[in-house]
Image 1 (spheres, rainbow, N blue to C red):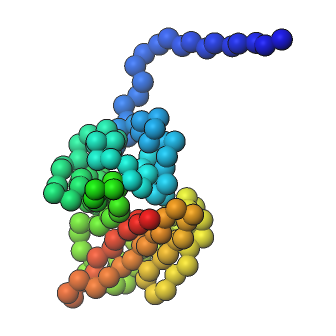
Image 2 (cartoon, rainbow, N blue to C red):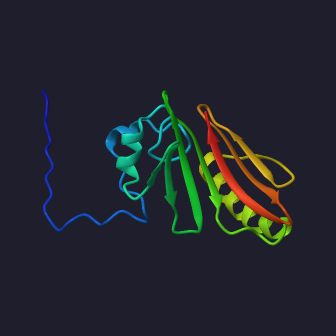
Image 3 (cartoon, rainbow, N blue to C red):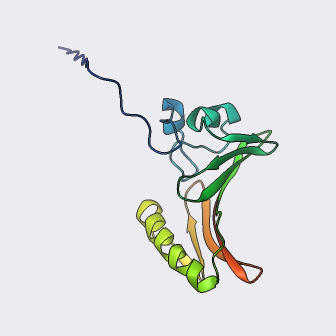
Length: 151
């Protein structure tokens, strides 16, 4: 004997998405291979645009301004999404100051991606379908924090 259960719901509108990101489309959620929810290597730019409706289009992809003082570049080529790189807009006065935020971000990524390997102020994750690097790098007399996802 087979049973079929149907559920229906009525009510107010769904809550708006958080931040500048729209809710991922079902196909994007199904194919998240980058380590970033909703994004898959090789996805087309129009699929990413559906997730990031406020992103600016560049010659190389999409640029999203974050509510947290970051810029994220979603780079595309003929084969689709090829990298995701986030940079903190504000420079840090020195590597030590950058390292404080790096430590917080590393802890967040370790919780999501699993334990990282670290060398100085760079942390690395090797996932089944992505490589991730979080690093503080010298920028003149100051420092910049960046996060990069690649296949």
